[in-house]
Length: 216
Ligand code: AMP
Image (tube, rainbow, N blue to C red):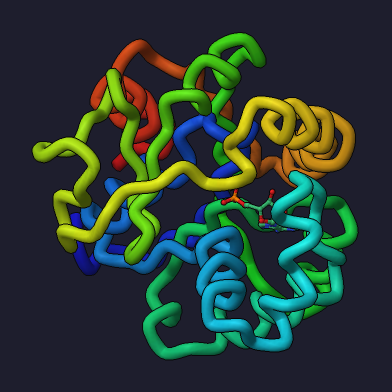
């Protein structure tokens, strides 16, 4: 599949729906980068850049970072050479204004794929999520454990719990998702680009559903 026609894909879904995990798998499969605004913001926060300083209070409270900050990040990132043959957007757009701004910038999207998971499953999942403190890869203590407890399989760094994966913050993030992000499904459905995939019991089964839905 590598090197075939460009695929510009948006992954939609609640926090913890598995967007990041599936994005990594699809990236490897299609040979295109994943762009995660969450990862970009976390890197900016740990480096203490101006964007990071601005984003911190929002991210830690489980609120959305202002649209203008996100639009700036996306404009810069998608202009890079590695995006020329397509990309997977993980966690962006997250609001209708972000989607409109992307359209206005001429960012073409082929498909917006929504991973559908109920809130109860999300809350269960987030409590077991562990994130690499270095490369941001995610694990789950039961469903997707690292080979060595507490260590990233890829880079060997320590795994940690994201501050915004704490239970109270997860609730706030779910509310934000339903209010601000879920309307994007109708936005992309109107444009004939929406695909929906039901979450499956395993990562592999969800990937299989996604591949079927995308025809890859
Ligand atoms: P994520 O890793 O995608 O769950 O993102 C973590 C946090 O980063 C979110 O809860 C928001 O605070 C912020 N964030 C990431 N992407 C966006 C976006 N597109 N718009 C606004 N805030 C975002």
